[in-house]
Image (tube, rainbow, N blue to C red; front, side, top):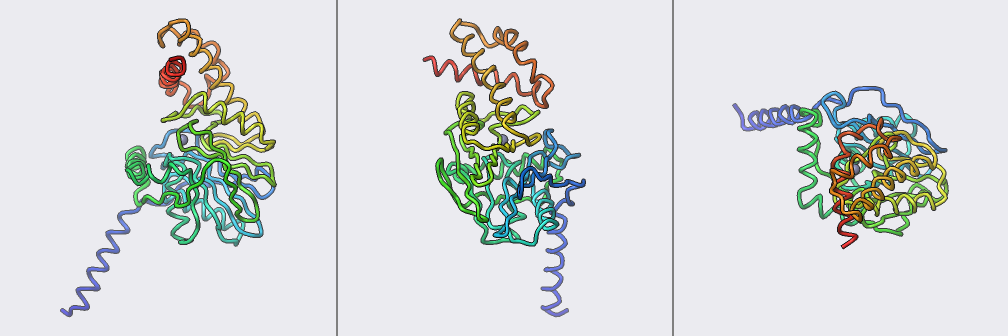
Length: 317
Ligand SMILES: [Zn+2]
């Protein structure tokens, strides 16, 4: 056999091995919903990543203008990113000119890989604290977490994090519109950006708010999250896109702010009164009645109370 034949065989085998390294496409007819002129949101499931949802759980969004498409949070796997890309291409033949990632949680940004594969030069914006965390291992941890929770349905997903750092007050011009970056140090995490699209009055809240869904906090701040939502409400935006759950008006921000405020102020009072966190819980539960049916309420409440307790103690010290 010739050398060339061997080379060919090796390439063929490598190709087959590569194919086995990627799970199938995302199932389901995920229809983008128009939430404002030029703005579309694909409202994902409000569950934790699982084999049945293949890791899809966030709200990928995109803004379409004559000058190009801007994508916000293209999802938690290469398969989800490819779905988002395919839905965009059904609506427009304009190229993607920018991507924003709202924070470090991989269910929002691992889909970058699909966009980058088609648009190698597209800038991907994220808060300045995201990329160092991704490089330090958070990216691979998210790839592994999604593989585990979905039983390999996200196989083939690689770490493609944001490569353009932004901070509070930056204004990014993309696709003919202005994206004002809003960061309040610590909120849902310590990496959150909200995007105020000035000309059209649309606010992308990231995970600073869930709507119908209570979200896990990580290295964030309850007090900071409340302030972030106050800032979002003060912007004058009319359409609010949450990280998880339905898009709506100002109520998307006010309902989540009220949840956080009820939680934090009650815990703060408890700390002042010298109560332990298990003593605060029964005082808090009746006040949180409006949110008890929200997805994630039961699973997150314990960690929210203990997190708020530590924060209130530190603030009082
Ligand atoms: Zn998050």
